[in-house]
Length: 356
Image (cartoon, rainbow, N blue to C red; front, side, top):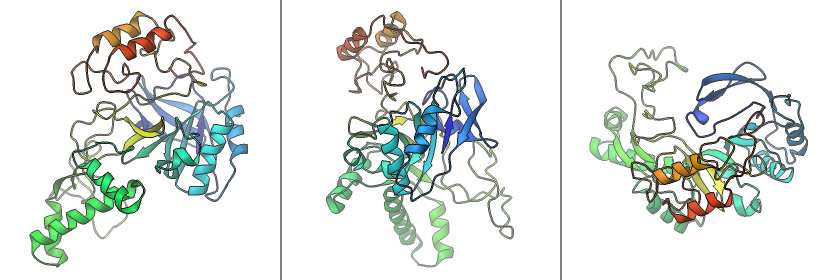
């Protein structure tokens, strides 16, 4: 877990979580519209069995990363937590202490549909990598799979369930096409996979004759994402995707970022899908997060201009703006105007220490 203090952050905007990564010790690199920049951060290793993180979250809230530029608190927490106890301890302490720093990353226990009830809503605003939100219609198959899973098991599917379900269908189809259980015959059929799943279109990288993969070496060899490896050389049989930023145009399976909002886990990244909703900042961090659409610190005609341009649009329309859909109902309408009017002419500083 890393706590970072910095002047301004643009969460789920031009860059997003794909552009946050660790650098040297106590340093991270963060993608912003201006490019990558280094920000000093404090690394907090935590035990997977820890049940109380008050001391850690208090340290994050009160320093030591505080500087004259960042104010008296960190502004970002990059969480990487798979353990159930540690994950729940984090959420409990973050909510109880009123920490302003935004948690982004992955917290597996808070992907669970029970998280809202089990934390009494304390998980609100926490964002995590996820395969889906709450019954999110990622593809035409998603809600049917979700409903069947809930009916069978009495709970919502966690991220691993989606891949397991798709894998069994893909394997069955490959065996049927091969007409045998011989691995050498099944693998070529698997390599031809290009099928719709509950989380996107799915195919594998390869086969590619222009490969530099050496089976005698083993281990991690050049990674085959085409955006990083245009020749597609490297280890075959990984999942193919071209998308990792704020838009998702090719439809191939990718990681989503979801945030707890009003008892639901909502997909906030990518930002261009019909199911995408606006990312929310805790009001304790930035009170005008909902209506300051252009993030200039004042609710004024510039914000109204965005709403006017998107007026009466829905997510599939050309001029749609997820930021103007302040009530997240999928339509830019009078409800959004009303919210803007409520905050009209209000202002908040958006300089160092605030998230616009």
